[in-house]
Image (cartoon, rainbow, N blue to C red):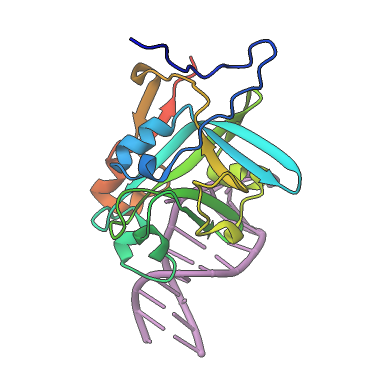
Length: 194
DNA sequence: TATTTGATTCTT
DNA sequence: AGAATCAAATAT
């Protein structure tokens, strides 16, 4: 067994490793898997010299045209087209006239699906709700279609936080009562904090 | 062209 | 329980 190169983590005299950015192939997986795995990853925003990072603690999965809660169930429109595109791209939309919601597109091109980022933790403070999150991170529709696999403006990082499946609650999605049976699917993933 | 709706948040 | 506020979807 040859000696392996192990990334160091801020040891004395060492430069700190840059955490890996989540890649296209990371998002090219089943949406429920991506959603589950995003818990504990970091959302990073670089904007005007300001750097802001939050640990993701709540997400929701929206999967395909048959999922009536998924915007893409209305078909391929100017609004939903981004969800039909390649994974790892941002889908940002305005909701209720005043709030933005951030999603990351998942699965193969042609299959519309995404994960909604619902809540993050910033320096121990819970930013609960997609609208509040986007307000704090200054995310609006100018970031719609943004490639989230570049280390620019907005991306995801794996900072090595391990999250056990036992610490993740699966709950019904919020605000989709109109979707009938689809509203009851436990496709919301939330980190249990106690 | 007109009306309704919505992956929300805040106030009453 | 209701308001704020508007783009997109749906009805006309």
